Amino acid sequence: MRKMVHYLTEQRGRPNSTDYRIYLKTSDGKYISPFHDIPLYVADEQDCVVPPKKMKMNGIIFNMVVEVPRWSNAKMEIATKEPLNPIRQDVKKGKLRYVANVFPHKGYIWNYGALPQTWEDPKHTDKETMCCGDNDPIDVCEIGSKVCVTGQVIQVKVLGILGLIDEGETDWKVIAINVEDPDSSSLNSIEDVRKIKPGHLEATVDWFKKYKVPDGKPENQFAFNGQFKDKDFAIEVIKSTHSYWKALVMRKKMKDDEIVCQNSSLCDSPFKCSDEEASAVVETTAEYGEPLPVSPEVDKWHFL
Image 1 (cartoon, rainbow, N blue to C red):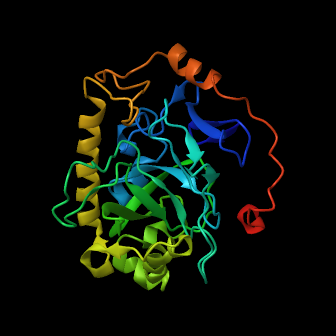
Image 2: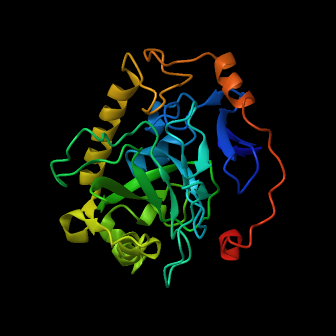
């Protein structure tokens, strides 16, 4: 169990297996959904961890849930269709998913994660991309110098956004920086990234373009010819996905194949559960165990 600011992570199941899960808790031990219960805006938190002076300097600050640490390959993600939405490794055809090392990159080249309380609605056609949403929280590439850990909740400021078209779906990629990063005060726009971190944006486009090619899929396409949009544009996209999320958690009914909206903090949501009900969800999962032996079929570099 690791303490992340004022959130805790609890591991369940066996690492590197399909039953491994990371649940999030508040500092007083109450289980929460990283999708629904962590505020999108840091200013909305009762126990704000960012000093007011820094809030004023950086403008709007968002919470980010880290799913994949930089340089790692396991495709960890918020399980949107499981109760309490723990973080788990994606599975395809019964096998754990990893991203390939596409030369010259090693794994994910940023801390990769999601903004809580956002949702790219698959029934909404984006007027900019002319494609529907991908049915997930909006993705974030955090470009700071620190390597984070899965389940960590960090505070970020948005710098810009990239419009990825992934297999015909809109899949926005927010570019952000941890407010605690040494370069944070110098990075306030997408143009600042070009000046202070030369080559980083080009590498990001290259990575998203090619990362599925080793799996036999074609290169991904982009809106705006792969050009990054600025901070103001990005914040408007985030606001729209936040509004779609609000509608999602306020529905009266939830179908079996839809996103699970169980939460422990949204008083007006019909899916709000008690602390006891949340604890019962976690108790049904396997307790944290020792890692399984690494299969010879798994690339050893995934675990370095």
